[in-house]
Image: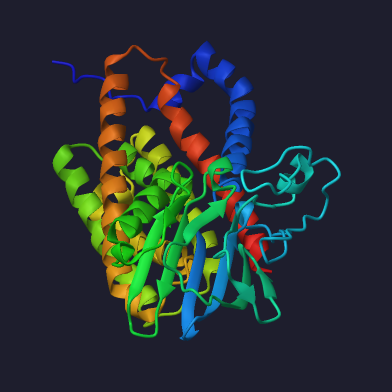
Length: 387
């Protein structure tokens, strides 16, 4: 009896067919479109804003206001205090925000201006010269206020938050050790300050973690690439478990200050890890067994250590004080895992559905080329940011 013919890799079958030649014609354009789309989305991915009031004396508070940048660009935002905001170009600001301040123009938004600023208590008086520091990825402003009647009844509002996709974490610490934490969202940008609001913002940290993984396109592409390589629910479970344990370790070490790694090289290396797993998908499509297919939990674990530093950078951007770190670390990590599991479950469902459809033979080549092209764009972009 004749032995059955060997299975031809997808790439070889595509090259031998007219569809494969057609693919080679429009694939570069598709990849350019993917890079442009994802880079545009990435440019609008921002970290949470952070408002902190620390009581230094009865009725006096040090205020810290951290505004995230659009796409990591340095901000050119308004000045403080809120009562007299100043934007770099208000010639076209014909609309106003809910607080009555002029809305930023499209030109200002393109420069990285976020139309958000916090309200202070009505009887608050600024008693120090505001200080401003612009960093890569955020602008930090600090000043001191005196509030003769205290904070009870203060309506905490981050004006303009509803016009963005940004959350804002509010934290107030009193001299007696009492802490009030709240997470404001675009659909709920305010709350009334009172003693009943005291307590840790466990749900807020969970939401931050959940949103970070779902809006962290680089982390999602890495996980998606792993899912595309391996077969079998059991293998996927082992792989996801290894990734979870690994990035939980480095997330904890970095957040607790045990390990310090610069964020820019970490982000560039994360992009490089996506290039690697994208190439592993191509090897699989050619009928070869790469390292990821042979030991998926090993690859997921090793690169998970790297991605954990990226998660830690996101949590550090909030500006957490030391006594909040254990709580924030726990619930932020739980939020990341919940979002990751939701994404993996959704990806497996979509993959199972697509396998039932009659797709062109070149279709399996699209994901690795698209993922790899976007990742290489990030490698170049993030490597340039190091210098």
